[in-house]
Length: 326
Ligand SMILES: C[S@@+](CC[C@H](N)C(=O)[O-])C[C@H]1O[C@@H](n2cnc3c(N)ncnc32)[C@H](O)[C@@H]1O
Image 1 (spheres, rainbow, N blue to C red):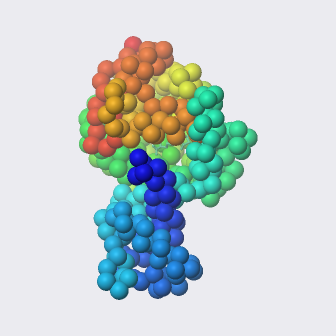
Image 2: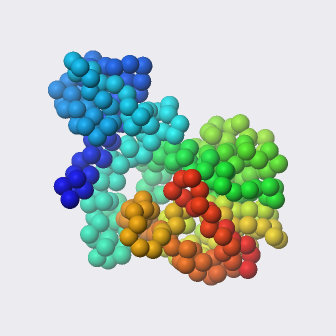
Image 3: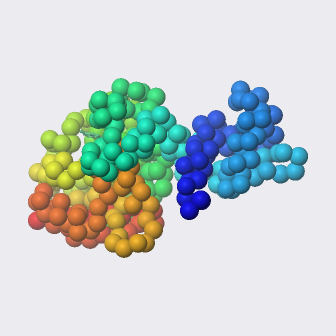
């Protein structure tokens, strides 16, 4: 129990280490706290204590004479790592994140999400109004897509799909990964206008000759006439009625014989550990969504005119929930 209760301290320390860029600075060899403090403009004693703490959970290693070196766990926090979890670690330490989690009890008592109550606007509007937080959020999504993108592209055969729309595709790494692996395909990134702007010159650059970027509002419509609609970490953001609107828009747009591919964690019944069960709480606190079981996905699909055909596991935490027009 003490270990579990200490979890917030561990996450906070790792977040601070990533924010200061320490994992990047030890890439080329061991460094002392004094040396690193000079470069990061931090207090040498305090920085030493931070690194000593993270080293005891495997994030850096303290060698003789107080020299700290890279470990596999610190390496994934580097900016240039692939996958890089640096932005995810930083996001966990941001004010809005901490304030949201501090309202978990309110969310559990009321079923309401917290962010709107704290800042007066829904999360994606907040991220739009605060460009630095938006940048960290989208870098986090891109970092996670370095894991999920290859896993999805490997787990699913896109042979019969010639055109695909990535609904709420962020800066486009998932779509770029799928297009790179499937040269017969063309893709559309569909996002809100300011995120489309952020996606230009992003991960889609190498496949831009087979890709278009379009902005709009997925709650009312999506670009029509595609063989498949894919959406990763979209359905888990929203309550059922909103999801049904998104999936209905895709149902209207899809070509005959086309597919719906929802990429999310699928919650397994029982007590087995699943990171999705904690991500589910984050969805409760922030946008107001939830992670779902296969049965809950089946019901959503049915309500929007789709038939759930398969749940395909991937090498990452997400599964691909496939549907066809009912
Ligand atoms: C959790 S992120 C997932 C991003 C991306 N699919 C991924 O997995 O990295 C949710 C995305 O939905 C987008 N979004 C929110 N509201 C939207 C809307 N009304 N229409 C289109 N996209 C929207 C956000 O801008 C954000 O990029």
